[in-house]
Length: 221
Image 1 (cartoon, rainbow, N blue to C red):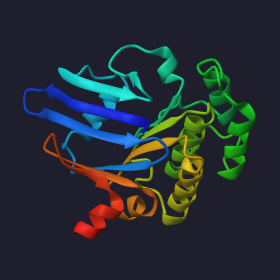
Image 2 (image 1 turned 120 degrees about the vertical axis):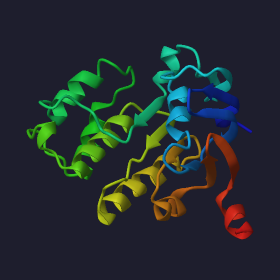
Image 3 (image 1 turned 180 degrees about the horizontal axis):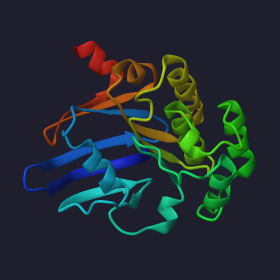
């Protein structure tokens, strides 16, 4: 079996918090919901996956490659949406296009434009004038437009109205439909995760309480 994510015995010590031997796997072609209360360690795990935090020990493999080391080729295969969408305030959607086509070798301007039209995002309006929903949709469009194999999403639907959330969830369903793409999504909106996730991993105070298929979890509880 091929895995999009393989995390084994991940540890990170802070003065008042510690990740303790975090381990879980996500097979290729599926969506995993990553849940836990604020401060449980989800962001630290995600930052370890993105080479933004250096673990004290353990292994993190994304798409079969070591994510704890600088790996430019691996970054080209990962799309990221963090809980706060950040682009320069004066940028338009086309400014974002001009910037990211220099960052990603597989940047697809036509696909990016397709998402802009699907999400009804204006070309001339500046980012600072966007609503929260528009900002999130722009971040999703940018994350998908370079043809990543894996999406890492942190609270991507938080603060959005139900119609916008459903629209974005449909995009994620389509993304994994070919069995060759995968998603890790953290969210406090359990109803969203119930709709799209195949696996659930629950983190509590830096420790994985369980990581299993959603249907098995529902049968158990």
